Structures are given as C-alpha cells and as structure tokens.
Length: 108
Image 1 (cartoon, helix red, strand yellow):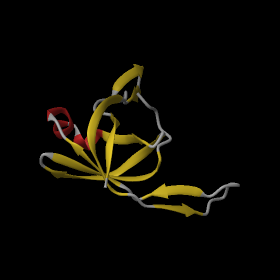
Image 2 (image 1 turned 90 degrees about the vertical axis):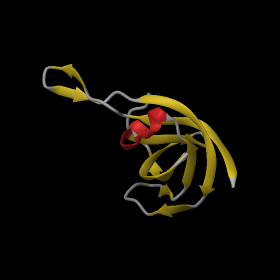
Image 3 (image 1 turned 30 degrees about the vertical axis):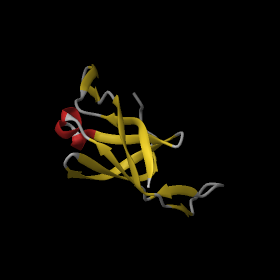
Image 4 (image 1 turned 180 degrees about the vertical axis):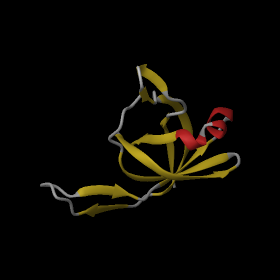
C-alpha cells in the first residue's frame, strides 16, 4: 500500500454561463490518503493506440466538505494524470474512491 496526496475534483453546483446554458464549475481540494489497489489494463479502441483503464482504489481521509459533496467527486489526480472516479464508498473517517479511465472533462 502506498501513500497518496493530491487534488480531488468536485462538481457541486451548476452555474448559468449564458441564458439557458448551465455548466458545473470544478473545485479542487487536496487530500491525504492511501492507494489501496493498483491495477491497470489496456483495452482495444478504434484509434491507433489502445485505451488505458485503471481499476485502482484510493482511500482519502475525509473532511466535512468531502462528506457533504461526495456525490460530486469527479476526478483524482494521481501519478501525473487525471482519473475519473467511477464510484465511491463512505467508510468513516475515510472515503474509498474507485478509479476508472482517464478524465477528459474540465478541470479546476
């Protein structure tokens, strides 16, 4: 098990950027934790290169903000890449984040 420290991206509310157009702004907060599971696999794609998917699990030490907005967790920056959070589990005092493929959305 290795240590983790890095940003976790939250999207907690939508803001009207122009009439009828709503975009969720991203907020990043740094957390300490541990990498529980480290697993990766290459999946064939239509492009030249295969897609990298990870099935990692990161356990962060939660605070009031992360408990309140856990359903808004979108990504984690780990090993110089942004990974999408596919699911989470609340296990006080921690939140277990399950990671999937590369995050391609907006970043804070």
